[in-house]
Length: 231
Image 1 (cartoon, rainbow, N blue to C red):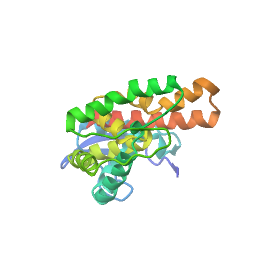
Image 2: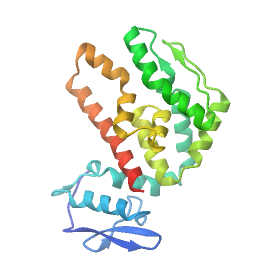
Image 3: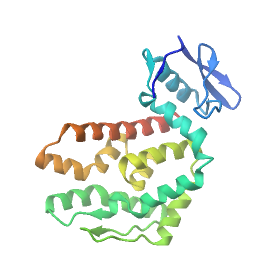
């Protein structure tokens, strides 16, 4: 929902516990009414820039840092168990664990781009993910899921906000963890998450709706990466 721009200038001010974004000198609040107190000046300045860039109407979908910060403050703490549970569902059916059984070109591309990330998770946290090919489902071990849960629980609410967004955009908790940990850049994370789609486009082309969807997913991955860099 868009609202008319009601302010002239966006700025940043020091606040108790961090930094605040101000509109004409008044501190911004989250959609749930909490003070928008940010952990770093850089993040506060980025959100102030998002507010300042709005035209006659305020479009929240054009403000990724504001959205992620609001999620961290309004949703993560209050719904942490539910959010962790959602992330574990992604882990149970992680994109990287479902490989094609044909054609050989796609099989090779998936193995080259996906397997190193599973090897990284195994080396980093001792998590062994099971892989399947074709349409045969695979069940991840309780030990693997529990280990990933412990990894995720170690993140603060700000990191979890970015992790949740990146996981949904990539369709993979493993890719999102690689983004949070700096194993992948935003561009790399998006490319790895789109291996199947990219191959299909190479074979058959891309329609406008798919192009728009891919652009939105790419923006979410880059938004999460920028948010993390500003914390």
